[in-house]
Figure (spheres, rainbow, N blue to C red):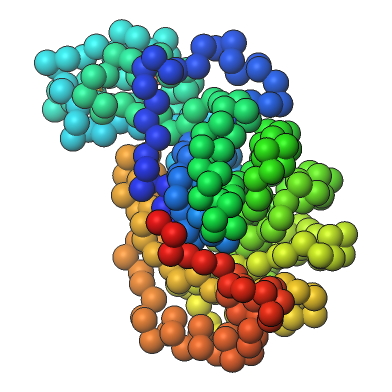
Length: 346
Ligand code: SF4
Ligand code: SF4
């Protein structure tokens, strides 16, 4: 779970910018993103541009960006905006016959048969149809990011690669990081840690910092709530510390009801990271920001209405702070005499 909400600046693909089919084979320097968010203050030092890459190997039940999970664009149809039988223009555009009128005269999307070809989008002037995802080159992303280089210089900011999971498009992520370094832009990687070590190693070589999610040390619970074992994730964190001893690593844990909401769950994670030199740590309180997107995507929001009492969250954070001291929070690896990041330049 990432702390910023990409929905804040939704990326709608204008019909004129839809990728031609040939652009899907345009090499490792291009990839799929679902948002670029400028002026972020919460995902790394200073003022940052967040680049959200498509694709994630995990299926966390609480994911606040479900539109990020598939590698290709995800098509949604907002029935409230559909003009129905007064329009119907999209239906004839669909080669997969995935669009059809429902009994109420409003169009329905069959996500099981949709091939994500995007051909229906230009037909929909009411924006009922929407694609989460855009094919883009690394150079184009960095052109957008570089426009804010003055802000980065004054706030010690830069770009943050997020997702989804950047390791799912490792070649594209590497191209982005290389391009950023060529332009002297500070780079941060946000990762769930699940991916091949050689890919993570390659990316880390171009990073000024890594935000690394550790969700649960209990592998059974991890498999149940994310769909994957935690073993590769834990091994990757250890390897990252060993191979990059000077790279700032900040571990984060989203606090999720019924998954890792007890002090014992968090204490086990702290025990795991404490022996790792210069690794800071932070708890991310649970939020339900993504729940509405599940409706649009036609998927159930599995956590339902379950919430964590504020007192529980506060108590766990207080105990965590007490155990970690100044290693709690994103500034936890910074030397004591180094000034904290200025955050008031906007
Ligand atoms: S993206 Fe393509 S396959 Fe999916 S509904 Fe639109 S036209 Fe049909
Ligand atoms: S083009 Fe858009 S508004 Fe028109 S029927 Fe299709 S989904 Fe509805």
